[in-house]
Amino acid sequence: MKQSWKPGTMIYPLPAVLVSCGSVEGEHNLFTVAWTGTVCTNPPMCYISVRPERHSYDIIKRTGEFVINLTTSSLARATDWCGVRSGRDYDKFAEMGLTLEPAAVVQAPVVGESPISIECKVKQVIELGSHDMFLADVVNVLVDEKYINPESGRLELERAEPIVYSHGEYFQLGEVIGHFGWSVRKKPKPKRAKGADYHAKSAIKSKKR
Image (cartoon, rainbow, N blue to C red; front, side):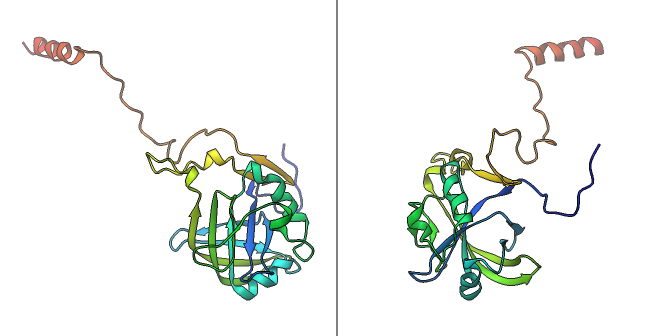
């Protein structure tokens, strides 16, 4: 039997990402966001929802740019720390020993240790209530080459051990249980034993006689 709870944000798990922002040295900052996701494939668009009182809010609103850096088990402590400490008081890159690297398109920096950094330009700011949504165009994606299979060219993000956020806790993703479309994929026909086709054809000819 299910209990009835008051309306709340119960869509879990969610990605726990490190969002980097700032266009010049001295204002670069990093903060943790779980209210984030994809909103459109073509054109590629995503969003982050941020409380107006957060230090990075004004930076992103003024510059119109940010980077979503995916996180991993090795970045779990930094992910949590950057979510509870303010950029007004700390240089988060320095405190967490993270590498500040330039992005390819936007002025905001990227986290060098992140397997994927998604460069974004704000398209619209939507006031929602406790949070404002920064709806953004994805203008570039930076991928760490060590997670790209050199033979197939496939991104093997699972090797980075991504983490997610669920109701106040962080979890490392587990084993693969399927792939897109596996539920409707046709099963391969069983292989016939050698000589089976010959004997089957012979039996059909015998019946016709």
